[in-house]
Length: 476
Image (cartoon, rainbow, N blue to C red; front, side):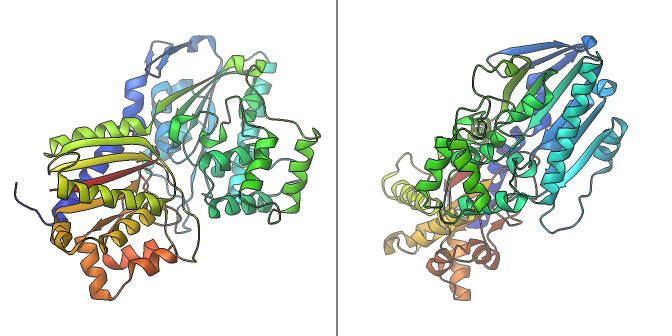
């Protein structure tokens, strides 16, 4: 097959990425796993099924939060219709600071069912996050009042990635500034989402199973879209509706591992000491009776997106190879691996002779070393591009046969307006024209400005879903 220019390869990579994202859009996911026949609501996660007779409930409440909360809530409210009594949907605020603008279809649908939509900060919670947390707990208090008055209530909780920051309820004696400072420290030192959310759960009055406690004794069903490797329900959005297996000792170990004890706000240190001494309560654990009335089901994952990427790649004429869905570690180090894969494909036809599409998913981390702007996907792409510069001279011409793309399925990589970035010969040539050094920008964690200047950012806008990241290496 003849070589094609990088611009065409970019189009193929973007088409594969967008197909993967489309597969995990809430409306499509729910069409597979949620159905309503007369008054019978059925929900399946592919392994088990839950069935609820809505005729037996007087009230239905919707509680949605996360980057995919709008389409998730819209799908469920459209399905349940007039049965919905009240609700709240918490979404990520626009990056540019502008007020949230709802499409007329969303606005009309939600207002007709007394559902409020609130915007909040991410990845660091802000005052809007606290206000949203307060409103969510007020909704839970209303549900408990209905139950106490004999009005049986069904609560549908819709959870997606980003929920930890968007819904904030600082524990006693902690302020928003305390929690934000802790989150920034953890993000900056390269802590994993599992570690970050372990801490968040213990500094909150709403996470780590506490939202389920707030809605009890109402019958509660939580549907979850996973943005966490391994799809651990007690990690996604900090596990607000499931038992928490982590402890205050785990929190202490995380702080010690990253040498944060001397940097933490005093209130966080006091909370930790109180937890270790048994003076602060632990989060609800497995076996707690409160979870008898709360079911949590996983309905969307990175694996589903990767499967669709594989299908689309074959459709475009590539031999497809999936590395896995649990890619983790430092983004810049993982970038070096993809550079190595590319050389093996070119030199040895491993894992196959071109055209080849290598696919992976997961979530890497970035340890901040500089003062630049970017995200883990852009950093990985910049690392790949930096490795291109060190390719053997004999392979340089072959770079035009390849493109690497790393992007977030939510359309938002770090605190930027980009989903990710392309690494290819086109970006490298443009960098040379501009006199840009990949190594210097990488040292400053300034991948966004590098790719913005070279025209290699992928901008999709918020996608309405969130199932971790996708990496694609295409070779023709």
